[in-house]
Image (tube, rainbow, N blue to C red):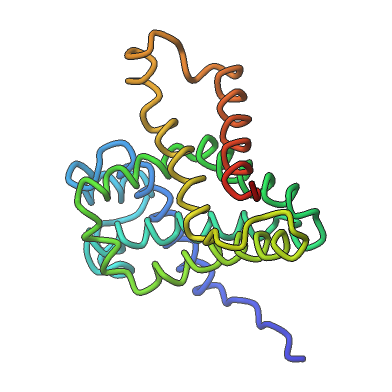
Length: 214
């Protein structure tokens, strides 16, 4: 087995610069949107230079696409740390639901950036060569859990992993992205710890009901 060679000093510096730019761009785009996020703002926040952004990402759009890709990459990386293989299918499904729900809460920029990109009708992420690469593991992990549940006669065989994934994502995403307006509309605070815990339990119950045989 060949040992991985450590990065040289220049390569380490380049990787650090790129990472700093991505981190700064995530904050700027999340706060100001794609149109409002300016290159000079990002380079200043990253303690770098405009030319370095163009060097590593080619353009503002290239940087925004990289931010979206990195957001999905980190999501998959975090999800891959879940111990699902040996867990009971119901418990594994609950773990996936809780992971997605908590990830959205811990990373509000995830929702904000997706809102921004959807306002642009997904035209930037559509140019990504890696978007499908990042979506596959997330749905695949859920598919494995559902398949084990089907084998044990716990889950329905006619439910697609993609549909269950969309159900979890939509119920979590919609609640959190609209909690401020919904709080005003419904006349109750939806972002209190008790309200968030209630919706988590409701979400888990709804998904289990959807996949459990009648």
